[in-house]
Length: 368
Image (cartoon, rainbow, N blue to C red; front, side):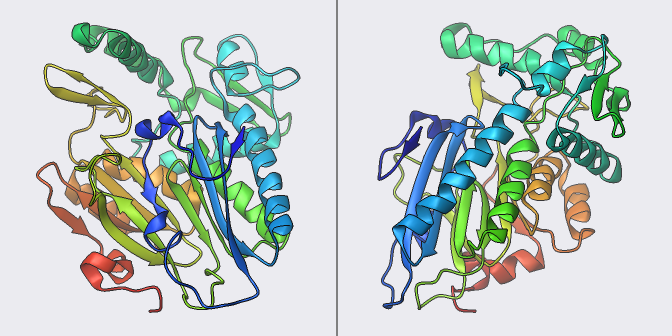
């Protein structure tokens, strides 16, 4: 389903909103041969995907975005852990065959699993795609809370610890020669939610650039990838607004924490305000600390900026799951990775590189 115009799906309340309109969807422009167009669809990765770009004609823009939409649909089906699709072996197929047999899969799945394992082992081993059994426990309680908020509960530690016995990523076996994935543990479940959306966005963006689309932003539920510069004759950089986690996207007028000005970079956030439920006045969000098996409490939100959208997706979660000194050290050890941390008390910290891109904290503009 593709929706054009100003219609807003209720799913937005459960995802991170990047207010692209801050300097992309508004403002005066000089006359050029390019026109700005927008496309929005809601049927991939359980989120809102918006594409804003400049082309010489609407037909050209619609042709590009149709290719992007079709490709996102393909990747959505491959990375889906909840639904079956005729003729497709996907993440759900792998989970269904845990402890039974290897599953032959497309190259996009092999590459995603390989990427996720490599990123896990070369970092702090917090963002684990084999953590699905624990996340399933939390999802069950979150679903129950949404159905009956007055009886919202948290899982028992015994239940969480039992699930955590089945999260050894070494038991995710990749056979590139035979194009198979096998889960050695029959109770293991893959959950690629921390990486799949950004990874898919990177694939789609790189493919459409080869087709000639070179001035656009793709926002996949807030996982933003900016390509080139806005061809409006007046700006050299895209402006991406970052939501203030302490503000409501629908009711607060001043909901923007900061605006960053970028070219050919990805901007991705993780926060405690996206998917959560309330128990005894406390927010139980969806980013679970693998050490405590409880929602991480170091920050309200983290936003990372780096060229690759798949890596940005991973690092936003990884940084969120580490105490600040470790998180900052990890970010600063990566070339081209910048971040801003928002703490529970509302204070912020940021890397020097982030400050150079920031309107609020560094006086950056769309032309510097």
